[in-house]
Structures are given as structure tokens and as C-alpha cells.
Image: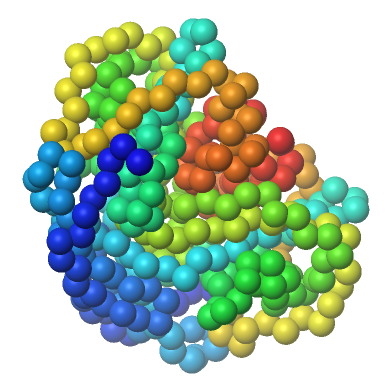
Length: 175
Length: 175
């Protein structure tokens, strides 16, 4: 590494249900100091479910942080000690009611490395079979099915605004 | 909107240099309550600089939140009252020392809508001309130039791990 910031002081100012916020004083390479506000997150998965007929399943859900509904691929946070692959299988069932015989890792990405350590593992799910839909009772989502062409058109037209969904479509369908 | 969460109570638990953290109690559609931890962020831009010869400029920089260096496209936070277009022009000059005669908005994306309102405006910059490099004195970055084919290969091989960079490459080069 060419550059590195040594932590001189670290305060956890909030430790909640999902997030922890650390405020750190760091030593810069030029010996100045700076403050880094860092949101610690458990990590998450996102899944691009593609049917044999070339259709994609999305979920439309309200996001309190934005006060709007977004169209996203199924996704969810890693639970304690859960590996990404199992998390992807669980979320696929909980959110759209399918099991996948084929689950391929497309890549993993840092959603906002300037202030958070959140990592998102992005999977493509194929060979889908209906399973029992057991949604979280406090999760309110609508399942939306679009064909591949329509999905890419929505991305191109700016109607898909969620980062992990844009990445899942790009990596799963364009590369 | 099919679903909506009414705020019953909102506490700002931290208000810092870049981030504000609000913890909200919300009313769910089934009349249960839930806690939402929301990171407020000023928004940001990311720029894909493409030369006439088909080369892309990246920056490699240390990210304290991850304790590692990442290869990213030039990017930066919106300053107070700054519009995204001007921010993109400013960051292009500050980070890689170029002005662009052509700056095209590829799209705008929410980096992590589950817990943050951060939006990233993604631009493609073309017709680049060298300008005076005036870096932040507290910013430590290395400029890296790769051709388009090599850039896409790095994305495909999982060597590009930053969301905004993956989106910029996908939207700017594949669609």
C-alpha cells in the first residue's frame, strides 16, 4: 500500500440493530490529522433471479431512508455467522418464494467505501423452482417480473436507481 | 405507493462533518413499529474519464472504512449548494488534473438504500484536456490509466470492487 492512515483515536458513537458508527481520528501520510466517520455494517447479498424463459424477478419496496419505493433485485443482510451463499438462498425464498438449483457468484462490491465497510455479494440464480413463501411478517414487498430486454431498458432509461440492482443486471446480463 | 412508513419519533444521534445519523421509530403497514437507522449523506458524483485513444483514468486510494486501497473512478462529495455537474468538473480536475469538454450524465444511483440516502450521479467525461492539477493537500491518490478492454477485464475478474466504478464502467462502456 502506498498510503495508510493510522488510527490515533476511535469512538463508537452509536451501536444499533444494524449499524455501528465509529468516529476515528487518523494520521495522514503528511502527518496532518483527519476525522473519519465510519458506518460498520454486517454485509449483504443481492440476487439476480433469471427464469428459463428469460425473465427477471424484482421486488418493489418502500425505503424509509429515501421516503420512496424502489425497484430492486431480492437482497438482504447477512445474519450472524451466515455465509453469503446461504443468505442468498434464504432471501430468494423469503422475498420471492423460489429456490434455485444454480447460484453463481457474479462478484462482490463495496457499496460506499468512502464511509462504510458494507460489502454486497451479488449472485445470479437460475433453475428456479417455487418454494414455500415464508416472508418476514414485517417485510412489505411486491414481486415484479420483467423480461431481460425490458429490465435492461429500465436500467438504460434511469428507472432503476438502486446500485446493487444496476450491478446485478450489468454483470449478469451484459458481461 | 403501496407501502409507507410513518415516522413516530426521530432522534439525531450524531451530526458530523459528512454524515448525520438519525434513528427513527416508524409505523409499519401492519401497525407494528420498527426502528430505522438512517445515514444522511450530502450526495456525490463519480466520473468515467475516457480518452480519445480509448483509455480510462482511475484513482487508487486508501479507504479507512475498509483499511485497504481501492481502484475507483474519480469521485467526490457534493459541497453545499453545488450542483452535480459542477462537482464532477471540479473532482475531475482535483483528482486527475483534466478538464472535459463533454460531460454526459449516465444515471444516478442510491448506493445503499437500506440504510442511507446517499445518491451518486455518474458521468462520462470525454474530450479531455490537461488542466492545472490542484489536489486537496490532504488527499492522497495515485492516478492509474488502463485501456477499455483491460478495465472491463478487471471488472469481470473481480479486481474492481467499488460499486460506483462497476456502474460507471457498465453504463459507460457496455450499454
